[in-house]
Length: 104
Image 1 (cartoon, rainbow, N blue to C red):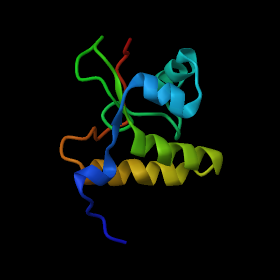
Image 2: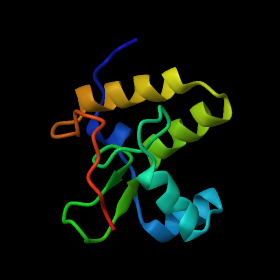
Image 3: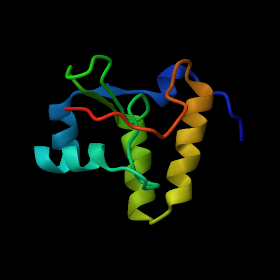
Image 4: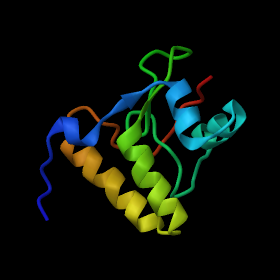
């Protein structure tokens, strides 16, 4: 399987409102997922979502959320972790650690 992907294949930026509609979530559920730590299904700033400025607007990577959704439904944490590693290796400037800053 090739490890090189075009940037546009790995990222589709959507708004918070689009994410909530897509997942049929309330705002509180989204924040629970963003604040999740030390879990193989945790979302990472710079991979699953983007908040370039602390306290600023958050946007989401629909492609990585879709991978997370499939992996979560299949209870396959390794699929999610592999997708994160592929994303980090393929996208210039992607977050390279699973550490989190408090955001809000």
